[in-house]
Structures are given as structure tokens and as C-alpha cells.
Length: 279
Image (cartoon, rainbow, N blue to C red; front, side):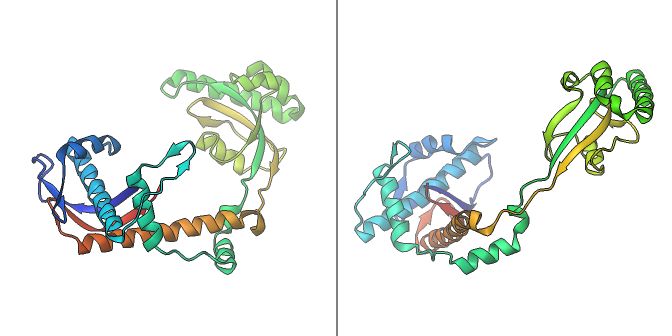
């Protein structure tokens, strides 16, 4: 069970941690120290704080399990068996945190309002000729640009020689394939390359060399395949799971906040639950 909560601690990061207790039950300092490995932070005190607040909520849930008279029934998932404490905490949440199932109407409304999330990406097939030059080498950059402009002039007279010119001049491994880069989606090339490619139509060659951190490119867009919206039926279960998890996280957070507000907690102040989830 992983819990994230807002914490106010009456001390500076350099101060010595104080004793922490929940309804009169002290959380041993060595337990907090062991828990710190699960809360990595730049400063030890911050890790200590994260560990302390997690153990406070853990103690609250275990105390509630005892009050409810629950018996631990550990589950095994992906080859890992729950500890008895984990089973008790899960049992508390399952018993006291009720989450309604999202109905088809709710799922369809989410789908209609977020269709861009369910659209496959556009696919581009492109080729290029790279004239390599480091960004910090002014002389090499100038030469690379001049070479690119010369080859581009040749291409404008004879567009059909792109592949042979790529094999002769390109300093990219794609040269052996005539400059072909295969299928690309947004985010797979440098920003400068991508901006030029997205503005082109299939069969078009860039009108000027395109500068990037690698040098200068002559780009040809060979093909574009428009993305499509995935049908609702194909993602209905995915949407239902997402909505169910979202509601569950909020409900768990509210439940933990109620436990915190009703408890006597010393040494650390917990102000409301921001997130709660059961692994």
C-alpha cells in the first residue's frame, strides 16, 4: 500500500526528528529509518519525513482493521504474496471505500470528450541527405551548408537522383538505403527536421537545407499516412478501468483524510490526504 499525503512538520530540514505516535502507539524510529529506502530524496530529513508519514497512515489503517475485527487473507499476485499487514490494509479499503462502477454512458461521454487520446499517430515515410557538421564548428557548418546547397541544385534539375546522391554524400547510416529513414512519427526526429517534414506534401523535397545539431539536411517526404480514431468498442474497457482507478484514488484519499482527522497524531501533522492507492 503506497500513500501520499500533505504533511506539515514543526521543524526545519536540519532539525532532529521527534517521536511520532498514532493514538498513543509510538512508531519506532528504526522502523522509520528502514522505511526511508522507499522514499528517496536529496536530503535525509526529507526521506525521513516521507517514511514517517507513510508509516503513520499504515498504522491508522492497521488500527482500523483491528477495530473492525478483520482477519488477514493475503493474496498472491505476479508471484508475490502479500504480507499480513498489507492484506489487512487492503481489507479495510475494500470494506469501507465503496466505488461505483462507471456505466457505459459515462465511458462514452469520456470517449467523446477526449477523442484525441484515442487517435493513432500520423505516420511519415521520409528520406534525407545529411551533411554533417558540429554546432560549434563555424567553418564546418558553412562548408556543410554550401555542399548541401550544391546538391540541392542538382536535385532540382533531376529529382530522380535523390537516392544516388544520398549514397554519395549523406553522412547518415541511412545513406546505404538511399537516404530512406523508414516510418516516422512525431517526436522521433530533431525539432527542426520535424517542423520541415510536417510542412511538406508527399513527393516534395525541402526548398532549402534544414539546419539541425547534426548539420544540414535535404529532406524528401515520401509518404504520409493519416492517423485514425480508434473505435469506442476497442477502448471501452480501457476507459472503464481508467475511470474506476481515478474514482478509487480520490475515494481512498478522502477516506485516509477522515482517519487522520479523527486520530490523535503526535510528532507530525498530516493535513488532508492527497492520494492513496493499494498495490
